[in-house]
Length: 278
Length: 266
Ligand SMILES: Nc1ncnc2c1ncn2[C@@H]1O[C@H](COP(=O)(O)OP(=O)(O)OP(=O)(O)O)[C@@H](O)[C@H]1O
Ligand SMILES: [Mg+2]
Image (cartoon, rainbow over all chains, first blue to last red):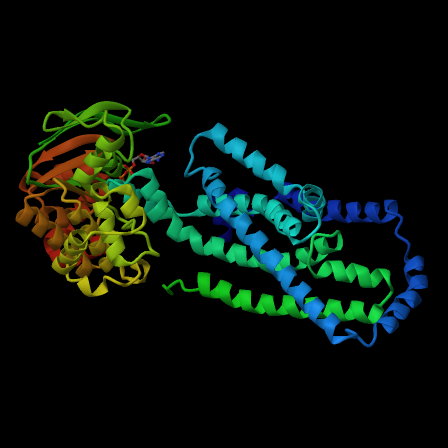
């Protein structure tokens, strides 16, 4: 190995790359500076946090022990929890069902027409940019208080996200199978049905499950503004300062979320993890 | 009879296939040879119309197939079955469904999309699989099969299309020597038994000589050789493959079997 000769033949490989180093340095310095600026301008005061720590301790004291009061109340809570889960489940499923066709329409390898795809994408972006809570407030005004507004809120906010994720999964799919189907005389629809769909369906199913997990949390929050479910009771108990009940409700939600996380994580692995090892 | 007239394909400024004219008689086993980038794949893909020609025409029994659209185009594609180097199966679907893809063109859209295959279609697919000795794998997922088995599935798919012609684009390039022989033998059997024209891109000169009854040599998008395998002299091979040719021919002459294996594995 002749270092000198190799250096002579490939000078660029040995030369220190100042441009690249400058970029890396900028990538580190810029976020740090931004962070410092944000701390200064957002009125962050650590002394206030320390002064308030005592009050935070008082709250914890008030919340212990968690209690649900009467059995009738426990049943109401459990019913509300079930309602929250139902809102999350229905909302996610509806969003996925609506997003499925749009995901295909927004994918480059399905619809080559640029202008059409552009329209669908911007529509999905617009829907997605509105948060679940805002959608809840909107739907409460349209269909009234209650779980139905919750279902619609979750559906509206996730539908945009699903559409985008689905279309990206479809674009990432391998085109060889589609080509195989079309080379045999299959139509475009056949290509999508037999070449694309089998590849992307497991990915989509896993995304839907993941959203269901996180929507159990969202469904709790939108309950607070009156869109049904356990959030409503959480809000009421906070208002009447029943801190024991509040902590019980929080634990209830926590238990449900942990349970759903575990089950859906397993399901997701079962759906995507059966790729043969090669 | 397939007649290609002045077929040209450009990618941007690059000419992949340049003014190719060929006549392929029915029932032949034609090998297309040439080094990497010569335009072999592009030529085959244009015949199946997976790629549009920039210029020129393709005529089948006097009918211009370059102008076909819609159902007529799909009928043509079913008529000239394509076999790919990478198999192009739908990996998550089972083997039988993959073979049934070859029947799509002859099935109503509704029943095919719902996967309601007729008993005849299934029987046809299974008998094609039996002929290729892989009927026992019918229920397995395609991506759980070995490369050689997957390529046989692809051949079965081509067979159930009841094609007039099979276009095979380096069907053995990702297979080991044993599977190479299995796949090439299957193509030869189909060619002789059903009298289906085979147009096959090959990298290995030995294989081309063994199986083909006519060779078309391409270099830089042009046809530079067209004739019987015996007529392929060392000079022509050198023109086709550049400097490597001498080595190619010598190695092949000295020890034919290992050389074939080396090419097939490469
Ligand atoms: N889709 C494409 N876009 C741009 N250029 C392409 C495309 N397909 C092929 N080419 C170019 O056309 C030329 C011929 O390619 P082609 O795949 O037909 O060669 P080949 O003879 O099949 O080579 P190989 O033996 O490596 O498969 C190559 O230079 C390639 O870069
Ligand atoms: Mg090729």
